Image 1: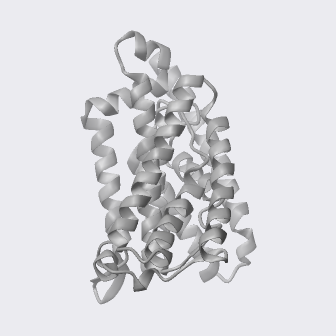
Image 2: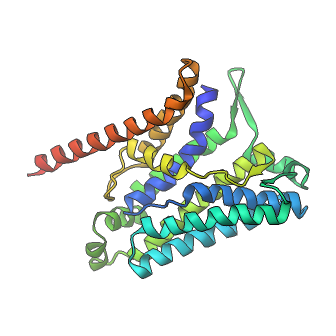
Length: 294
């Protein structure tokens, strides 16, 4: 359990944030590479510039929120699909990650994080383990449960949650009834960026060195986890718990293939198959639900 809950935890944190964004009717294709951007920021500021790691973590948070705000602002102001806007952000961040890492370190790796002042306290928060029943579990699993609980509460018990569902269901109609759709969209993009910062910080503190290509390609896995958990690609429907369950399925599949001694190259085949089955199941459920309402 500890082995498959570990990858599911970091994926689950991102999947919850991505699910909220998808419920709001948008995608963020830069979410994966943004985890690498924040991790590299921590590595460069703490490892290369030899600053306190908490300062590095704060700088990474500011960078992430700035990117998230830019994504949301561009989507709401230009009217272009979020798919296009965040694809551009993805490509720019991918180039920046590689270029700046080489400029600061001379290589494609930012290391030396464990030597930074304050590392021990940061490790206790982001990368420590908790012993349960004699087995060590990563603290990221507890953070994942907390994020899922908070995400569920926000969606079901707050006015902002109602705004998210309304914006994703019909943005024009939601504006007509007074929902601040633009502000909601920008907040959702910033929330996804904050989750990317959190996961990036976990990776940086845990691994103590970060590759320039960290996180690249994971954005599709986050979307798959959210869709497997019940989020509609068209927006307006989904849950934080469902996204977490999708991440759990991902973690079990990723490790289960290894335990069964199957070729790990087949993993993405199973991931794609799960995505197709989830989309078809969602479509059938929605069709029956609409028929029942009539």
